[in-house]
Length: 272
Image 1 (cartoon, helix red, strand yellow):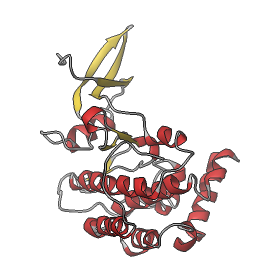
Image 2 (cartoon, rainbow, N blue to C red):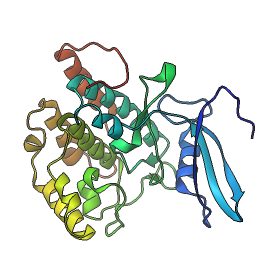
Image 3 (cartoon, rainbow, N blue to C red):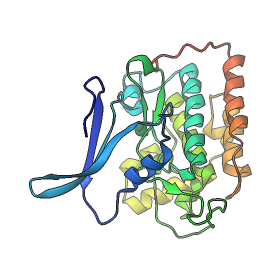
């Protein structure tokens, strides 16, 4: 398909499997007819032959490096102001994905990127490879049922307690993961991060889960504003499996903290 010369794109490809990759299927469904701020614009997808092999190819708009990389250039942490500005946009992104009946299930710094050019201050949530529906396919009004002993889906460092327990994910798990990401931005690490370099995978996942269960919200936000305690209490303790999250409550919490700290909105690429 013809691509206008003044539009820069990024291409992702995988070997063809029997089923269409969920990343293509999910992205094509969550993206509206008119591009939404913060959702990568899907330019084209299809099957391409190369060297007698077939590949699923997805072409999306070109974006900046991810926040995991940017963090390394900012002494391993962002300021409170930058983190709050990121949080407000990310809450909007998660809310939009949920409004389409999907869970992201892999919120992490590497899946958060900034826009280019005039969109340099726009936050994008990318990589829908693990996205999954939380609404019944036949009846979109009906929530999926609670299941246990499901496979691990996500990135262990930022995964919710439910993921470690093998419980089916729901909307609150995306918010719990986002909370861990925000703490990581502010502190440059998480209490269980060192476990990623020790032991076998199953042992590491089990120990991370135990630490997440045992750590209090107060300990997790040590050195950070109390609003982060309220955030984690809401996501980890108050929301039940089928509950509709109060998105405006969470955004209002961080917006209020932003004002209390005397910050002013001046969107640019994240600064140290």
